[in-house]
Length: 116
Image 1 (cartoon, rainbow, N blue to C red):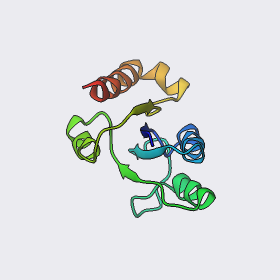
Image 2: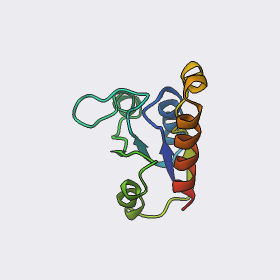
Image 3: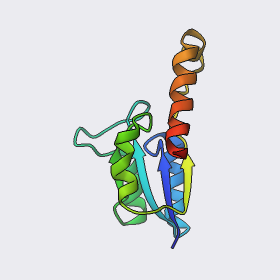
């Protein structure tokens, strides 16, 4: 079974991607920092709890900011991944026009950290 890491997994696209991957037989590890999604207050992604209900098994999840290189260490310590679907990003168009450097920096650093 291929192991896939999904970043931004608690968001709309991330949770739907996770659902499709699990239904296709992939083993999925999900991470998100909740900047664009909702936590249940206990560190669980509400959207992924719903995915777990749909597939009938828990979805491995860890709260993690991919811009924090050290925060990624425990994620990768859990073993090797065969693939990565990187969906974690700031995404509000209007805000990105007002704060272009923050968006560029956030999205680029996240990608570079995952490549490392």
